[in-house]
Every structure is written in structure tokens, then in C-alpha cells.
Image (cartoon, rainbow, N blue to C red; front, side, top):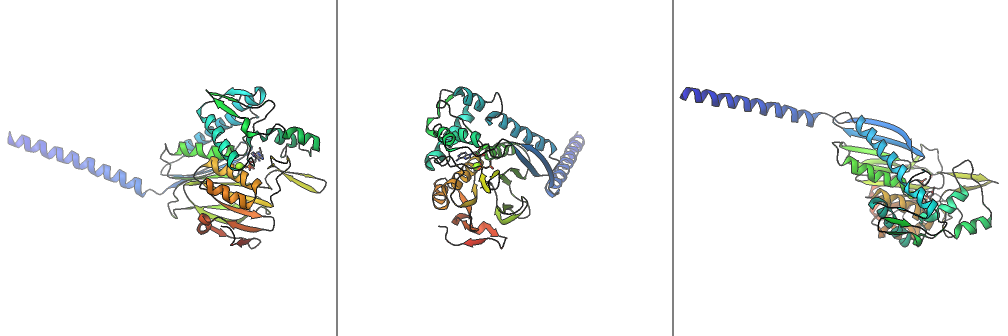
Length: 348
Ligand code: ADP
Ligand code: MG
């Protein structure tokens, strides 16, 4: 009897030890397995999406999911997509508004107020008049601009009881925040997965997710606004944030030796003329980095710097003389790599 018990106990110990050894080997294998990279390129939101995911196992499914998340967002917030709430709003001046849209409108209003209207999502009557970046782009005459300007007023957007309304004839254009918003949606998704790190760029907005296993921070190139599309003038070493750039090179119309870019000043109706040629904003929120980069581009450096401090964001400003201004919180993370630009010590 005693012998029987001893045998059972010994068997139990053996099984437990085996389970322990297997568990140890599996865990050790997971921890020692190097991170692998899965890349994907696609096109959405009128721009190129590049995904670089780092994980212990293949991340093709996650890459496909991310593409779908971005496409779904585009179908919801683009005024061009027939059937989207923004399409309906622009057609009828009223549309159903879920919690996500309601938050988009309230955050847009916060940046509209703080930037004294330099950032204004009701700029749609102007953007569709100029159509910069499209084949139908043209320089409108002064009367057309005055007429379009009369519809631009971000204070007229109202949200209540699940319904959004705009002023008569107003056109909402979320082009200045869509790509940053996409970064936020992708981050929310990644947090639910086993992905260890990721760099996702949606046009001029980049999500830096998790940590780079080797260097902790990620390196993001700041595009040379006067160079080719793959040329950088500096590098930011950052993590856990979004980086958005607005520049005068992104979409342009050339007419009679003049160049017109796609970021419009809601006060004048013309492409903004603040002497900045590029603004890069770093924020924990993709929406904010995108909205603020557009706002700062219109406001100019000094007002732009003040705006960034109100939203706990940092930035790199480049003016038309190729002077580079970096806000204090970002100085240690920015390296100038091009001798065509001069780093200024003036940014406060
Ligand atoms: P990109 O779209 O090239 O990343 P931005 O984020 O700066 O650049 O957004 C520019 C887009 O935002 C324009 O194409 C237009 O749709 C819209 N827009 C232009 N001017 C303004 C403005 N002053 N406020 C808000 N949105 C704007
Ligand atoms: Mg923007």
C-alpha cells in the first residue's frame, strides 16, 4: 500500500517536472527568438501606407488588419466617399454622428479655437475651389475666393444627441487630420495584439509603436522640403508617439511661374504664406500631431510654438531661408543631417 503511494507520488513528480521543463523551454524559446520584421506597402487616403511590424512570429494577418482599419476609417471620414457621414453632412448640412465622429469634431474645435481659426475643418469650400493636387486644380479669381470664404467658419459645427449640423453651404474637409487619426486607430489595434514594435507611416504621419529592441527609440527622417521625396534633412529619435509633417511641397499647382501649395489660410482663402516651408509635430496623439502641423504651418513659427505648448506637443519648424527651429523638448532627439540647412538656437 505504502509502496503504491510512493509510486504515485514519484509519477506525479515526474509529470510535473516534465511539464515544468517543457514550459521552461517554450518560454525560453519565446524570449530568445529574435524579433522578425513583416513589411507591407499599400495605398489609401490618397497616399502611400508603409507598415513595418516587429514580432516573434509572422505578422501578415496584422498587416492586412491594419490596411482594413485604414480603409474603414477613410470610408467614414472622407467627404469624397459617397455614403460617408461627412459626405452626407456636406450634402444636407446634417448627419448622424457617433461617439468617434463627435470626438473628432470636438478636438477639431479645440484646435480651431486655440489657433484662432488657422486650423478650420470647414475649409472645404476653399479646398474644392482650388482642388490642388487634382487634375482640375486652378487659380480661382478673387470673387470666387470671397464667395468660398463666406462659408468658412468652424464655430458653426454643432454636435448634439448623435447628430452633427453645419452652416448652410459649408463643406467639411478632414484632410488635415485623417492620416494622424489613422495612426491612432492603428495604435489602438496594435495594443490588442502581440506585436512588439511597429513603424507605420500614413503619408506624412508616422506612428512609432512600442520600443525598438536594439536602440529603444525609433529613427524618423524629417523630409528635406527642397529635396526629392526620399531625401531627409534631419533625423528624430523618438518612441511611443506620432510624428506628422505639413509641407509646401506635398501637393502643388504651378501657374504663370508661381507655385501654389495645398494648405490654405482660412483668413485669406489663398495658400498660407507664413514663410514656413515645413512643420513637423511630435505628440502622443496622431490626431493632434496632424492637426497641429497644419495649424502651425498657417500660423508661422512664433504663434505655432505657442500653440504646441498648449497641447503638450513639440516641433521642428523650417523657414524659407532654410533655418531650422526645434522646440526645447525635442532638441536632444533631433539631429541635423543636411548641410543645406542651419540649426537655429532661437526657438524658445
Ligand atoms: P497632408 O494632407 O499633405 O498630410 P496636412 O495634414 O497639412 O497635409 O493637411 C492638408 C489638407 O488639409 C489639405 O489638403 C486640405 O484638405 C486640408 N486643409 C488645408 N488647409 C487647411 C486649414 N487651414 N485647416 C484645416 N484643414 C486644411
Ligand atoms: Mg495635418
